[in-house]
Image (tube, rainbow over all chains, first blue to last red; front, top):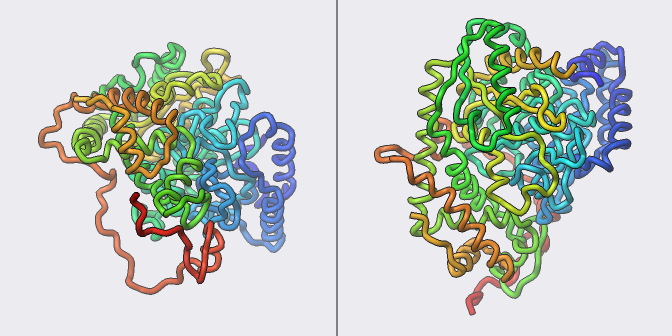
Amino acid sequence: MSSAREITADVRSGARSARDVLEEYLAEIDRREPEIHAFNVVLADEARAAAAAVDAAVARGEDPGPLAGVPLALKDNMCTRGIPTTCSSRILEGWRPPYDATVVDRVRAAGAIVVGKTNLDEFAMGSSTENSAFGPTRNPRDSTRVPGGSSGGSAAAVAAGFAPLALGSDTGGSIRQPAALCGVVGVKPTYGVVSRYGLIAFASSLDQIGPFAATVEDAALLLEAIGGHDPNDSTSIARPAPDLVAGLDEGVSGLRIGIVDEMTEIDGIEPRVRDAVRAAAAGLEAAGAKVDTVSVPSATYGIAAYYLIAPAEASSNLARYDGVRYGLRVEGEDVARMNAATRESGFGAEVKRRIMLGTYALSAGYYDAYYGQAQRVRTLIIRDFDRVYEKFDVLIAATSPTVAFELGAKTSDPLAMYLCDVCTVPANLSGHPAMSVPFGTGEGGLPIGVQVLAPALGEATMFRVARAIEQLAAPLSA
Amino acid sequence: MAARITRADVEHVAQLARLALSDEEIVSLTEELGAIVDYAAQVSALDTNDVPPTAHPLPVVNVFRPDVARPGLPRDEVLAAAPEAQEKRFRVPRILGEEP
């Protein structure tokens, strides 16, 4: 399989047609999708039409854009006009959005070919993609294992070679953790770098869209295409997209890199995952970086704060699914009974659990002790990171404490599933960028991801370090 | 500080959240929410006197756009997605007199 970079160079030069590239990927989807179930819908006809339009542009001597002819998979919580957008929930089954998300406009404008909408944990709530109303996605590296979540379909699509690029959303680790478990690159940019217009909201102060790719360079190419200010999202930062590809190979010499104790040396982490982080650090040091261990004490409280803040915001965001304007309606004798019957029938168990948890944390008598206290702890986490970034340019840590686990292993214990996010939630709470890069393998030959974190808008340095880790990892996977 | 979550709490919160939970769900949620809230209550271990809350990670406030009219979504397309519509409006069951 070619990289996105190679495909787009070939398509723009006329060496290969976008149509031929697409057919290769569609053939791979035909062959393996029944086993993996990465997609809620494959858009073969739309993709063929888009590829033909790219080829026609090339034939006219036009430049179809920096992602010309590159097949791309979209997480099914991003609105696509006229194309079903389900969030893997019965409550939105059959709904066709009346507009496109900004990221969808941008990838199409860059010449990418949208091949399908990928499966997710319902409303992006979960860490295994087992909470989908349409059945789980399986890990292409071992189909008895989960791909991680909630963007498990997007991670699996890239790992299986169904598309060189995919978009996901990351609220507590939903891009980075499945990237680690599937052995691909996954990036959560700084909060506000990528527009959320048309991303169906889960927890609005945490949600961020980002790329999946097989290589660090391809992820950089995609982030350059989707980033930058959007007047339709009031939380979008008023800056152009970050410039990433040009500086990728500047190396790590002289960079100050910290290994985060609270996100690496933790209870329950698999020794080979911890060893991978240490080995990556040693490699970076040999490449000229100054490496030390560092403590972010309040990160220990990340999961506790996250599982109050995210459900509280979700309980508010998901109030809109009331059987009135779109999606499912279950009749009731008055409007309140119709609302309650619709929501009872349309939402799955985990979504109900989070709505209940969030409503409880916000309810009279508990608001200050739970939601208010979690918001103050969030401030402490931000202060701890700010202090650490005075001494370090970049931090590294584990992404997931374990390699991919078996389907069903954690479905009966919600708290055990929540703890999958222990290394990833701190960057969502702080709003800082973080990404996962494959680095070696653990139990069963399954991939391990090393996480790279940077201060706000520090994507360029983060990608340089990720690129160096990728190069260190190459001999491991040879 | 974690108050034990009771069946009555779950029933009350379900009412607030507009979820017509089954009896089985009420039983399991009473136990699961209790365990999750016990875990989450560790946030109370940190001293946060004089620490302001963070609602949002970006220091942006009051983002305005120019006050000019823009076309909205096409009405027919939007109403076509509704479970029930009548006379260019969303149709719902009766609202008044809903409390028994």
